[in-house]
Length: 120
Image (tube, rainbow, N blue to C red; front, side):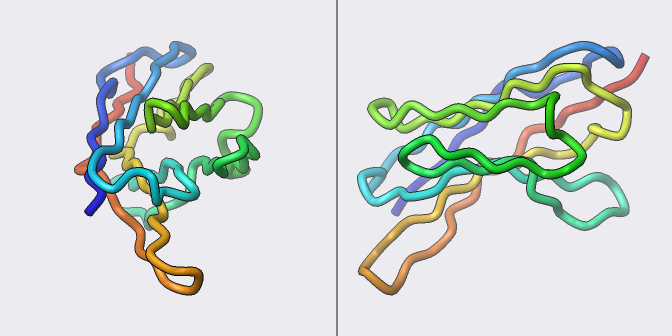
């Protein structure tokens, strides 16, 4: 079983920056893709960014050019650097990882979430 623990959320002013971190533990050798999603009050969960084991990243349209995802395979961590934050970035942010069990099966592990509030 893989466990994910996030850190780094908080309150920041518009235009500011925050860095979220997520550490995986347990059977982390089987982790494939990792990423971050968010859920704002009254809105559906949306993918913020994801990254493969070889470092190929994918971003949601609303964060392209402002957020950067990175990964350390040795430490099994994934970070999200968030710059030029906007009030609409306010949400609970969740780390997730796809855990491969066999060549055709697996599951997605989720962290407990960390709150990001962008407000003056």
